[in-house]
Amino acid sequence: MENFLQQKLFDNTVEAYLYVIGTILLMLLLKRFISKYLANQLYKAITKKRDHTARQSFLDLVAGPLGLFLFLSISVIAIDKLQFPGVLEFKVYRVTSRQIIESLANGILVTVFIRLCLRVIDFIAIVLEEKANLTIDQTDNQLIIFFKDFFKVILVIIGILLIMKFSFNKPVGNVLTGLSIVGAALALATRESLENLIASFIIFFDRPFAVGDLVKVNGFTGNIEKIGLRSTRIRTTEKTYISVPNKQMVDTIVDNISLRTQRKAELRMELDLAASATQLEAFTVAAKKILDKPDILSTVVFLAETGKNAHVVIIEFFTSMDQSIETFNQLRQRVNLEIIGWLEEHHLQLAAANTDVTVRQANN
Image 1 (cartoon, one colour):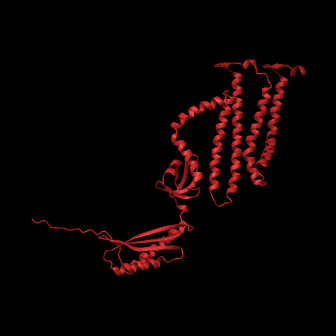
Image 2: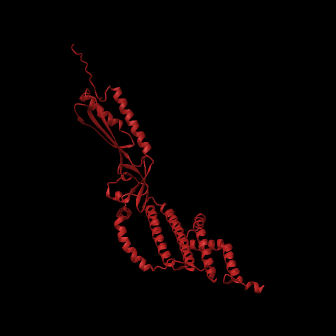
């Protein structure tokens, strides 16, 4: 038996292979329990919450990537104890097969570790969003979404630098120096993207609007759903989903409808020229009475102009922004119907375009 264990296969003894295989199988069996235990300890270090749902959410996000990272790390350490078989030695452009395998292993480990860190960032963002939802102000939610994406981008960049360091043996200092030169060239080529990134910081610190606000920009009206690093996502009143570059959100005029103190409705009544001054005055008085409702905060009714086509009466009224848009539209409809009813009752006609057709008989 001892002779069998000492037999060599691909420059390693059978005993060495059994130790490596046993270590990998043992880690494969225990990784679930070890990853859950370490994830629980990491959860306690991140937050003091003892909520079962939050803990389970964290385990669902982190336990899998953590277990995979531990399994791959132990497997790489165990396999590294073996002598690299000479039969597998070859070169590709002065790079040996051993270096290729080591580079792949390092790249995979770095990728799995970065993926684990991204999951931790996702959970921290979830915890912060739950706390932010307890407040009325939506600015906190907005900042959490922004910085979650921002730190993810930074983490991915760090991961790329680590892969270049451990997989391609490139000094990070030289890489950063090269990137600074390349970055200057890219900055000129991607100027608009950088402007959008800077504009996103301006939006977050200046706070002209927040997630959930109803805004009007570039002829589109809708609710802000997300403010990203490059663009702002808006769900329009037509239920379409548009992306507006952050630079445009900063440079153009943005009407934040949610910050209005009152909601305005306006009617332009063009009355027939046959209406007398007495009828017009009676109509303005009647319109003010019609607008005398609890939901209407203030009103404006006046004869704005008169001319060859019509007498124009402007009717404006304002309601509270706390009123829903459905209730506001119902109020407008009720006011319109009451005004039309008064006009019908008092035989006051609206102006209409008159077309005279003259027929002449040609003389033979």
